[in-house]
Every structure is written in C-alpha cells, then in structure tokens.
Image (tube, rainbow, N blue to C red):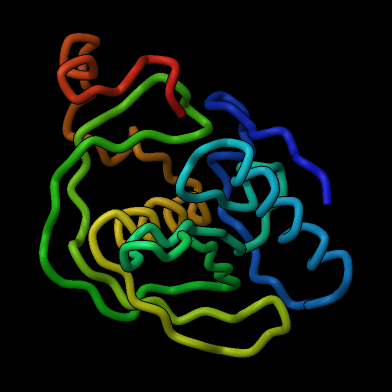
Length: 170
C-alpha cells in the first residue's frame, strides 16, 4: 500500500466523468488499498478515485455512525449508484481536494446505494446523516462535480470559527 497524492481544485481530472470498473484484478485492488491508506492519513470521511488521478468509478467512505465503543470503518463502493434517498439535511461541507474551504450544501438525510465490492459482487448499503452526505459527495466526484458546484454559499472565516472548523482543516 502507498499513500497517493490528492489532486487539488484546478486539476482538470477532478471535472471529468469516470468510467466504470470492468476489471477486478490485483491492479485495481492496489488502487483501493492505496485509497484506503490515503483516506486514513488525510483525516477525511471519503475519497474518490479521481481525487488520486484515476478516472474510475470507485470511492471509499468512512462509516462514522457506529455504536459507542465500536470502531469506524471504511466502505468500498465500486460502480456505485444511489437507488433511494429521502429526507433533507443542510450543513457545512468541505473536500480534501479543496482544503480550507467549506460551503453550505443540501443533501438527503438517508440514501441507499447499490455498488460492487472489490471482487465485483453486487451489494446494497444505506447511510444516514454524515455517511449519506459522504456517499453523495463522493459519487458527485465520479461525475466531475465538486461540492462548490452545489453549495448555496461558502462559509466565511468567522462562521468557520463559530463552527469550530479551522481554515486548514480538510
């Protein structure tokens, strides 16, 4: 496993549509393993393949909605699509590819995603709250959409301080 560089806003790769994953081989497994390590080191809650320069439909999301005393864990989603969504949440959102900037983004409160695992097997997973937000955010990356494209407005330095978010946070 290796930590990969996270592309920053302005890199044209971040605005491109990703192709489906068709080969579930060792090379692809290495990509997922590298993405896991990169996400773990970043302190973020999600990472999409285009953020590390690979235009394939693969994302990793940290499941933060766990029982007291349980560990958060990473969910790998390959060729994901949202098949159900409901509710609404409006809140601050940031991105590892746009460090230090946060905007107000409306997302569903609950989503159900259909995806493949690293071996090509189909499964469904549901997310609430932050996990639902992360699923939507990362799937947007696969379409070349950044959170700033969806933000109703960006947060000011003063608002970030009120929320306890430092400007250099990812």
